[in-house]
Image (cartoon, rainbow, N blue to C red; front, side, top):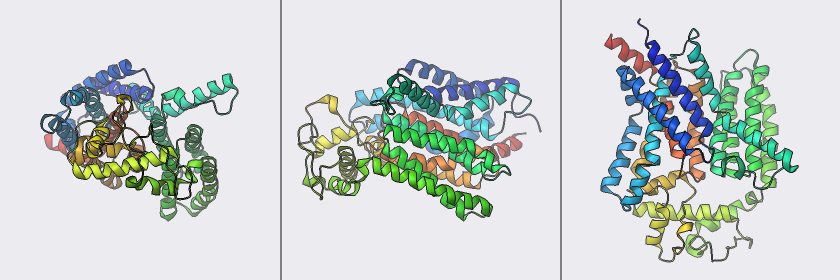
Length: 457
């Protein structure tokens, strides 16, 4: 069989991988828009050239990522036929949706490169570029910890004031990007447990996961800690039921579960928001009984059923989510904007919803809900369908790259849960989501690609 790729395309593949690794390195860092655009342009053009030289790979990528293509068609169609704020929606369309489309093309190309195992041992540039890309999923965790050590040295405080704002400028970046590293560690842990020297091989993934949980605790990111710990416990529970792991490994997992429960207990004990979470959620759901969620700058904070002041973050998230679900029932096709659709639609539905300060336009703190409010149920359905088919194929896939197949499976619940609970309806987050969805889609194209190429020869 002829070599799948020419030397020229192998060099282009290296550029795409290194551009993708560079994006994962700088995406969460503030003030990097110019460099981000340069890497997107370089990686995007290189991906287009790559596909132009291999039409079979292009067909495989298109087939594998068809739900994402439908998603972008819907985004454009929504602007022309369903928009309520054409000028603002045009800015979003030519801003982060354009960047998201480019990152999707890059992701589709990277998935093809990884799934076809293009990078062979006698090709040093490709071995290096693949290693760089694989390592890039851990870079945000490394940046965070290095900056923490620096702040610790100069402040002499175990927890520098508002440290979570220093490296990345906000908590959503910590949840998503350190979560990406956490899932990488979890994937490597599962692979290590199947090796003969598993006691030695689990050290690195265990260290990655431990440092990730430490970072979530340090930054007081409740959702990041809860999502990651839940994913870890759920995965280990399934591992205990699996017949592919030896009894001694299962015993080790049971022993390891004890400190995990202790870590979770310490987190809950130190974070007082968990102590009243149930009562605060009940208060937040009853939006007809309070007005604070409508005018949070002037109305008093309500009390829960225990006559305690609610935790503001918990209450507002639940109340806005409850209100948003009512709005979606009235506007299933979406308002048109990712950033502020909730505010505009809430003002239409409730005349007393706060309107006087444009600097306090709000989103619901849920990426999936904000996407549905902005672009309607079809947009969210296309992405969910992409998750579904990618995971279904990954579970059956015997070819391709083992790490990335398992990683794609574990990233599905991580993305679904984290985008449900994190404010990601702005800036870089959908660029990142679509980048990974396209990688995961193309990863499963290995069999299709080989079949199509055989038919074309």
